[in-house]
Amino acid sequence: MPPSSSNFDPEIFENLKLELRRGCLTLAVLTQLREERYGYTLRKALADEGLEIDEGTLYPLLRRLESQGLLVSQWREEDKRNKRFYRLSPQGKHTLNQLLAEWERINRSLTKILQEA
Amino acid sequence: MSKPANAVELIDRYLQGVRFWLPKGRPQEDLLSELGEDLHSQIEARESELGRRLEMNEVSEILKRCGPPMVVAARFAPKSYLIGPGIFPIYRFVLKMVLLWILIPVFVFIVAPVNLANSGGHWGTAWVHAMQGIWSGAFFAAAVITLVFAILERTQMHNAAACKWDPLKLPPVQKTERKPSLAQTVSELAFNWFGLIWLLLLPRYPELIFGPAHRFLTFGTIWRTFYVPIILITIVALLRCAITLARPQWSWFPSTAQFVQTALGMILVHFLLQAALHSPAGLPYTFVALSDGVQHTAQNVKVAALINVCGLIGLAGAWLGLSIAVPINLWQLMQSYRKRKVAAQHSPSLQAQ
Image (cartoon, rainbow over all chains, first blue to last red; front, side, top):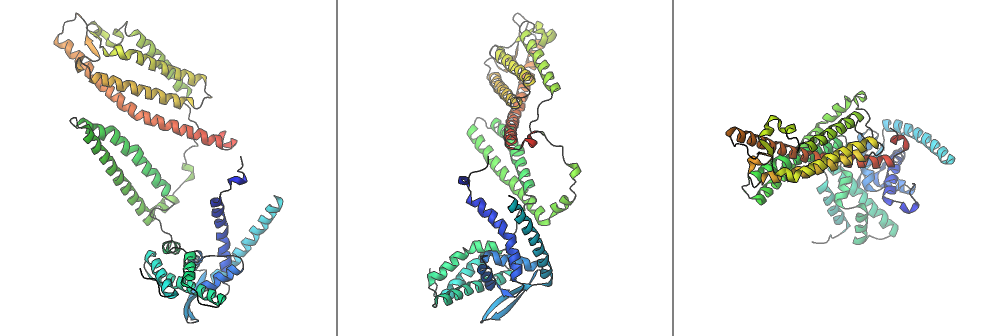
């Protein structure tokens, strides 16, 4: 028997939302880093576009993407403070293009599925 | 504890808390610098928005939103496992096998009885020693198994094993309910039927069990109490086989009836053993005795004593066997119940398998 709306479990919803967001955030971060940014401005840029991301999610993600060779970073002084600036590496640019193509394909399929439903 | 003098000190205290939980090394400093920079940027942005310096409680709100130092460090630190998800199911399986199916049976059926037998009447002390032994044994076994799997995880040896995995070597699909075969049930039915007839004939024709020795041997008094329960258990076994044959669609019946029969058997053997060990006449003449009017020659007494000792050993063996069979049957019953429940919840295609 399908669960009724009264059986809605916020925890399950939150977990599914997190799963849904995870891949999208990676794509959004890579896209934003086509131009050089440091952590806080990147977070702000994403939040301005409606994608809020906390420090505990962003910095480990940046570190992972850098260790995968998709980003390069550099410590530099700006406004009398040391900041770590990130941008896409050549490998990151290539991967981003492929990911965007994949995203377009998924989006088209999903739109079609949702229209049929 | 002194309160921080300003926002910078509060952030430094916060970063110190995060540093404590982060793995040591250069990445730690990088992470802290980056987190510190982010927090300062947040404060600056908020201050320029409000056009004034932030109060201490406002800075504290920013840190609160960021999360407790331990949680933040856990998010920042690289993910590491003592036993990773790749081998965790095997670890859990081995742990369960060793603790539930080896360690506990060994203690219950060997160590505890030996302790009780050697206790010299101090049963309480023997029981406490047995319990201490089972706990220390369980902790030691769990620690060794965890250590072995932690080493496997560290050396990534399971990845090599995973590469050698061959789908063609997978075991055949198990049916949701393993029913006893027709031949097995028919054989059991025939065996129980002849067994019942044999038991019913014994009081009238003792030569069916004693052979030529029936001239000087007779049944011990213990059978006056236990003969009827033995007949009843044989009838239960007979009925179990007959119902299994007549109602094959009752998938719940074989495992349930087998458990009931084994449990009844164990109870009967337990009381039989108790009665034999506490026989007022003494051990040698529990199961068989010399017939009235028969000469108590040394040879006759020796034969009777030998049969009684063999009977006692056989009974103890039966008790041990049934003690193992009862939990196994109970486990099978629970498994069978669980499988039926799962099958009922699954799609018809799975049930049809």
